[in-house]
Structure formats: structure tokens, C-alpha cells
Image 1 (cartoon, rainbow, N blue to C red):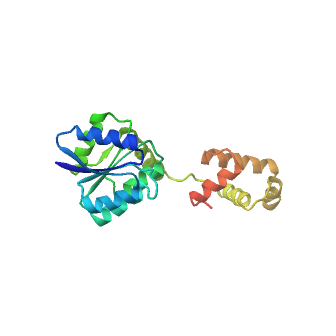
Image 2 (cartoon, rainbow, N blue to C red):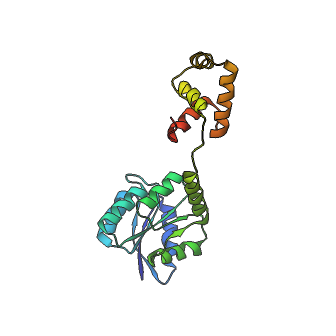
Image 3 (cartoon, rainbow, N blue to C red):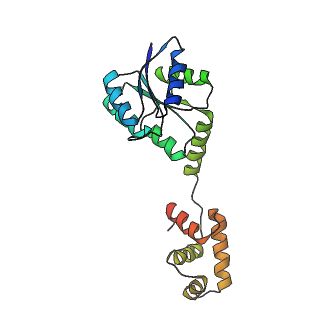
Length: 207
């Protein structure tokens, strides 16, 4: 029997999840938590095999609760069941130690099988979540755009707050040439304005 603790701050949603799990012969819901702090406390008291965890909850969010639960009982597995979240929230939950990430909109059979799979030691990700993570990894692994020495000079002066005429005087070039260099920078960085160009260049450690 898989002993499950359900953590979700919406009573109706939580009740629906409890009812769904209760219909499975091999799953027993041993507790319910309406916020992350209670989930941590109950996980320590009840020692469930698995915690079905929402991410957005009061007092303590799902990622932080996951980290605390696994710190006090590494044998417990956590399966995130939530609405669609941002990449950072997904990565935060996985980094905290969650063994799976499913969406509440998933078919009921998929949620039940997800609980069984995570209990069995597997990692479970909703297809849309897996696709987003692959895209994120590819984007992070992509090489930074290569700017020419002159383009970097222009961008550094933009970052220093200089206008196009000031940059032209500083570099002893025409203002039209400054604009051309900036257009090339925008194109290479995939941005449409000076502020975003400087911000992204800093993120990529080009400046």
C-alpha cells in the first residue's frame, strides 16, 4: 500500500485529489495539508511514502516544503501536482528534490500512474514540462553571440549612458556608423532596444 500525504491549499481541489487517490486499491491517503508548513510537520509525523505537493501555497511554498521534507526524511518521495508554472519554478521544485512534476489538468489515470511510478523510484514529468526543460537546457547550452571588438566598444558606451552622438565623438566615427553597429548588436542578441541589449550582454557576460 502506498501511503500518501496530499498538500494543496484549495479545499475543493484537495478533496478531489483525495477522492481520486482513494479509488485506487494500492493507495492510501494518510493525511492532508492546506499549506507548506503543515505539510512539513505532517510528513515528519506520518512518514508517508509519498507527498503529492502543490507549488503555490501559503506560509511555505511547495519547493521549500519539498526541500525540508526530504531533509528530515530522505526516503519520502515528492510528486509535484500543480498548474502550469514558469521554468524557474519547475527547476526550483526539481532542484529541491521532487521526483516528478505533473499538471492538475492531466488525465486521472496519468496522476494515479504517476504516484505509482514515483513510489517505484522513477522520475515522472508531464510531456509539456519535459519539453520546456529540454528547451531550457538547449538555450543554456547555446554559445553566446559573438560581437566584434567595435560592437563591444559601442555597447560598453551605451551601458555607460552615452547617446549615439556622444559615442560617435568618443570613437571618432560617424553617428550613422554607430547606428549600424547597434543594429548589428540588436540582430546578434535578438533584441529590439538598447536597454535590453545591455541587460542581455551583461547576463551573457559579454560586458
